Amino acid sequence: MPSLSAAGFTLIELLVVIAIIAVLMSILMPALAKAKQQARTVICQSNLHQWCLIFEMYTSDYGGWFPADCSVEQGYATVVRPYLKDEKLRLCPTAKRPVDEGGRQPFAAWRIDDITGSYGLNDWVLSGWPGISAQHDSWLWKTPNVKEAAQVPLYLDCSIFTYVNPRYTDEPPQYESDVIYQIGLTEGELKRFCVNRHNEMINGAFLDFSVRKVGLKQLWRLRWHRDWPMNAPPPDWPEWMRNMRDY
Image 1: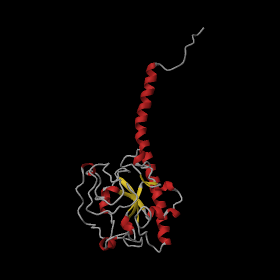
Image 2 (image 1 turned 180 degrees about the vertical axis):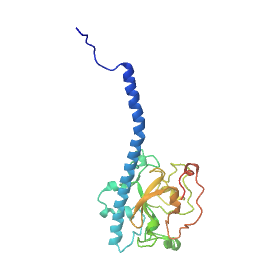
Image 3 (image 1 turned 45 degrees about the vertical axis):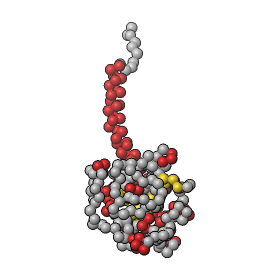
Image 4 (image 1 turned 45 degrees about the horizontal axis):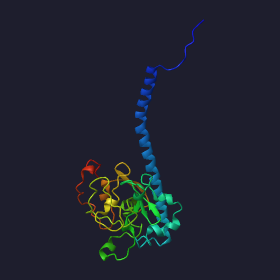
C-alpha cells in the first residue's frame, strides 16, 4: 500500500519564496512611489487649472481687473469665494495639513481664519493694495491682458495665501525647510514659493491662464512684476539647490 505524505513547502522552499517576494517588492516600490508622486502632481495641476477658470471669471466680471486688496478681509481668498465651488481646490495633495496639525515644511498647508490652503497669489498681479507707493504701483500687472502674460506667475504652490511680493534680490532658502510661514510682508518673499513639493519643482498658473511645472531655480527667471530684471545674474545658490537644473 503506497504511503501518504503531507504536501507542503519545505523550509528551504519557503525561504526561497520569501526572498523572491522581497526582490519583487524592492523593484516595485520605487515604481509605485513614483506613480503616486506623478498622480499628486496631476491632481495639483488640475486644481490650478480650476483656479485659472476662477480668476478668468472674476476678471471678466470686473472689467478685466484683479482685486485691489491683499488683506485677509478683502483679499482674493475672500472675493473669489462665489466662484469657488469646491474648497478642496485650495489644497495641493502634497501639502494638506497646516503646521498646527502636524504639517512640516515644505509640505505644510496654511490656515487663515476658516480657510486652509497650500497655494499662494503673486500680489504683483493685483490692481492695487492699501498704502502702496507710486513706484510699486507702477510694478503691478493689474490685469491678465498683457503681452508678457505667459511669463507672469499668478497662483502657485506656496507657504501662504497672499502678502507675497517677490523681488529679484530675494535670497533662496538656505535649506529645504527654510520656508516663511507667518503672515505679513517680510524679506525674501520668494522663499514662500521656493518649496520643494514636486521633485525640485512646483506647479504654477500663469497670467495667460496656463499651468505648468516650474523649477525652483527658475523662480528667479519669471517676470513677477513689470520692473523685474530678466537678465540679472542668478543668486548664490545654497548647497541643497546647487545641483538642481539651471535656467
